[in-house]
Amino acid sequence: PVTEEITGQDLVEWQLRVASGEKLPLKQEELRINGWAMEARLYAENPETGFLPSTGELAWFIQADRHDYEVYPVRRDSAVEPGSEVTPYYDPMLAKFIAHGATRAEAIARLRNACAACEAAPVKTNAGFLVRCLSHPRFAAGDVDTGLIAADLDRLVQRPPADEAIASLAAKKFAMDAAMGRFTRRASLSREATRSPWAQLEGFRLNARRNALVHMIHEGKSYAALPERDWDSITSVDGVVYVFREGDAYEFHLDTGERADGEAAANDGAILSPMPGKIVSVAAKAGARLKKGDPILVLEAMKMEHTLTAPFDGKLAELNAKPGAQVSEGVLLAKLEAAT
Image (cartoon, rainbow, N blue to C red; front, side, top):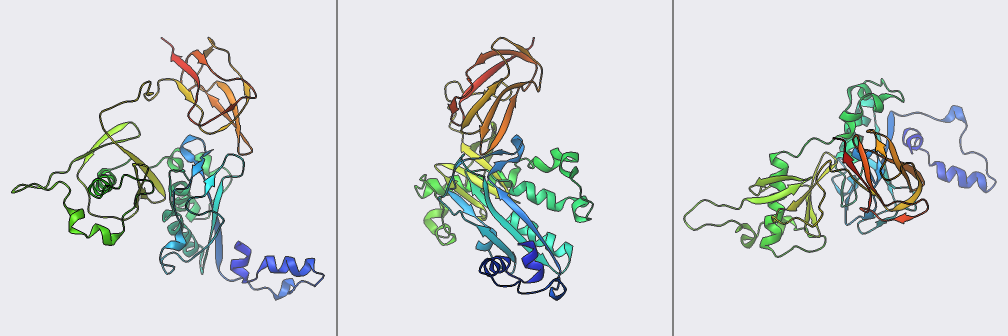
């Protein structure tokens, strides 16, 4: 795709012609290079968990071509759409974005904007990671080598924390869904619907200020926010609200005050299966003393092997994994007790 963008030639057509016995349409000296082009690959994966693949239904999926082409002038090659299923049996690539510009800086800017416009839920993607890579000063300067990502890994994979504006957007979606009775699958109101006076009554108080504080949970942390009127880059799926910013997705749940039995707290030592897959090997035994980073087991999914390690020093109190076993996402495979 990059070669096609800078030469204006259709290489697939060339391949078909040659396969049919024809000669190459042009000689090397007849080709002309025009500007710069670069490609980014959108993957169903979670950079924050070591780029582990993310599976499930793409209930919400928006790509750059949905927006104004004048703002996002990129080529998009993709074979998935909203409702497509991302399975653990194939490569998790969702799309390729190819940007062309008169200069390297222009190509970078267009590609960055295209990645920033991506929205996917509940499947996780690397769109935010791509945005941060394309914004990195070394990449912008062309000072690129294979060690760039590893040298600044934390900065590139970690999303900015959810701020007040993001929480307010999530609160707005919860309030609107409640007002319209839309806690349903793929709930999403149009801009026209949000202008309805009946959709503007959430938190109404007679002779008093509007009060519609929404209590939510995001990644185990409690948030309370007033609904924000802006409606861009937000959706809900099965009662869960997703706010999108710069390619990143922020997931919010209503805080009802209830907690599921056995709900794990952060750093409690529970080792859960991050995706459906097959256990290839088990490196530790129940009762073993482990150091942080020691391997516990290897899980195979999407043609890749992923080693699950001890999150801290401690004793392997529980082990529910056997080589060859198939496991689903979220299953408790092991539990580590912190060393005293």
